Amino acid sequence: MAETRTAKTACAIIIGNEILSGRVQDRNLAYVAERLNDFGVRLREARVIPDDEDAIVAAVNECRREFDYVLTTGGIGPTHDDITAECVAKAFGVPIEINEKAAEALRARAGDRIDEARLRMARVPVGGKLIENAVSAAPGFQMENVFVMAGVPAVARAMVDALASRIAGGAPVRSRGVVAHLSEGSVAAALADIQERFPDTDIGSYPFYRSGRFGTTLVVRSTDAGRVDDAVEEIKAMVSGLGAEPEEELEGV
Image (cartoon, rainbow, N blue to C red; front, top):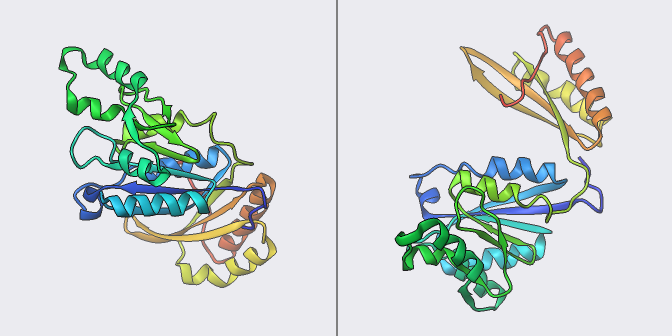
């Protein structure tokens, strides 16, 4: 699918040794991609990097120059290995400090339980703008086009939602999927022909095995809902012509 010159792009940086070790499965990327699409921004790349200062600084600096927006998740908690905030400060060449507004929110929530470890979550690079956290008091923060968020999925989602007024994009991508109990190989040639007739759409095929049956989900994406509908009708006709019953993909499946 051809992007317009004005299309805004983003990169997600997932930070955490626990993700790379396999001990924890990332649950944030899909939501980040969905919400960015709602904002009219295309997620063009995602990186998973360790809790390592050099790696974080390098990734933030490279991505903030290459993409319109950068969203990071992970590494802004209360423990010694949560180093994302100071790494982002280093990437921007500014000091890090306790943000008083963030500290007040943490004190109000923790009460007598507030301690130095919890106050680590109030550290923000100088010049940073807080990102609201509707789940718990500890905020994320924004530095220019970089948005630094928590790794805990419920908190990360709340922070992404809070960015709706800060991230400006274009038209969201519309998508529809057709489920066919056919192999990828059997639809490949005809699907390529449909893609050629709809160059302004992105048509993908995704094989599956469910309930003892193999099949392929054929997905059409475009900012033009009408073109999506037209391409889907051709795909349905193609599937029927190959002897299978096309089914509309259910949302969330």
